[in-house]
Amino acid sequence: MRIVKQPGRPSWRDPGLLVLTTLIEGPRHGYSIVQEVRKQAGINLGPGTLYGALSRLEAYGLVDGLPAEGRRRPYRLTEKGRQTLEAQLDSMARFLRINGHLQERGLHHTFLTGTGGG
Image 1: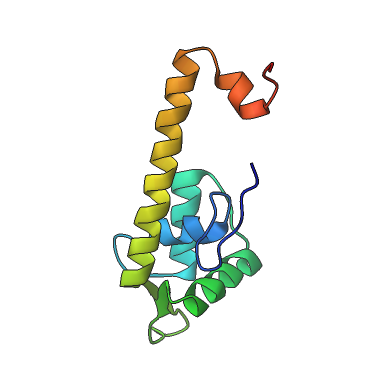
Image 2 (image 1 turned 60 degrees about the horizontal axis):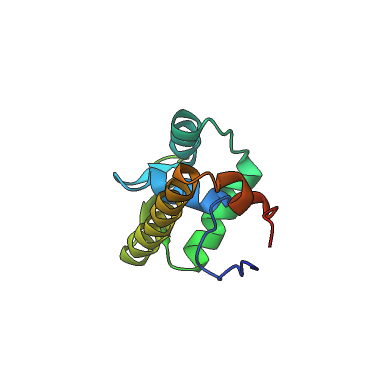
């Protein structure tokens, strides 16, 4: 099975997904996003990665850049961004439920590695 990346929809490994999750509770500026990603996921986003992700998310209409507060520019989740994030999290939850179901039946390794007999 081949996974096709859909424009405007962050993948599981995409920093954009991490950024979107930090904006659920309200607007944040770049440094605050980096700190929250580090706290929640243990991942350190560099400035290039962060602002590249924010630029893509803004281009897709998933976040809005708000007027700068001094040197800091906050970003907020748009309604489209909230819907996209919810859809992605639902997809991840379905995968985890399926994965747990397979693991209970001893199929976890076979399913994930594609090393099953057949």
